[in-house]
Image 1 (tube, helix red, strand yellow):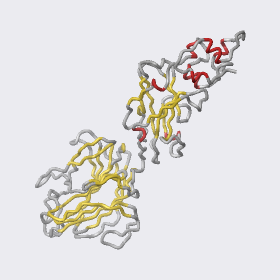
Image 2 (cartoon, rainbow, N blue to C red):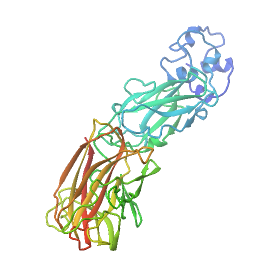
Image 3 (tube, helix red, strand yellow):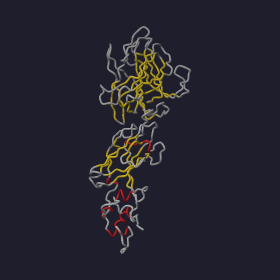
Length: 439
């Protein structure tokens, strides 16, 4: 019988007809038909990836010794940086990866076999073939594919993940050179660049939508990073275009390691009226005892200053201090998202909020921030703008549902604030947020 084990050991070298004859165990005087050398013949197993993909043994047509010789290996494959958004589950077909074929060392017509697998290399029930809409050269409804080299230079693999309702694990692209057993490759080469970031749910969930994950990733005096969100613990100004005009604070956002600074939105109601006076806006910070902070709350925790249970896992943003002038508005802290999701006008967003006056009334704000390229034209869709018309008090839980006005890639922002309604300069308020989702 043929000694097929010799084929992998000779990969990358040229071997003589005697070597070929010895490998196939052909006797000196044994008759042999050329038909025996085609795929499916006596000496070449049918549907064996090593012979058909690596060596290129045809099923019919011209055949020669070169059909049984190969000089390409994993070292001939050089991965080129792919689309940075290639892991998003939004149904968009992207180039998952481009493979440099090392100046034509892989001949035209040869094939590259690849698989998509969880990054751990083990089976993951949360990632199945149904999570993928299309793949280059896909083999049936599997997570495997075969791409053919049709020109010198490089070959691309494109994959489209469907818009899913579950958060998936890390996904690796695994390139394989098949061995004599289709399930036991000669070699594998894994590529896990940006593909290895967790796939975010792009239809119903932002990461950590109810703030049940209280892990602190990093913290400083002004910035705390948690899963899916950044908390900015400082005074921030909204824009004001009437009366005593002032510019909005610049807010820096991060998307996959890229930072951009956008001005905060313009407040359509910047000068609320209080008990005996009207605010000049939110230009000034607290004059003394300024405090901007947050805390995680569980469903059994009670509302600030009250006795009723919150009923939800949520985050509490709060501030307190003495205002510079009577009737001032002071905004901060800010909760901003780190997950950016493509949304269209057919989508809607929803979240729950609750505001409670502290030292005085609350003045709260929320918006969708578009990840665009121009600070002056990028979309900022206001979702919530509420000012309390009394000292203290509790809004109770409210739900905001809003249709997306303009197609784009968005994240959320929630800004706590207080209004010195009484004019006595003592101020402070609380904003609770939870269940942030796309519907």
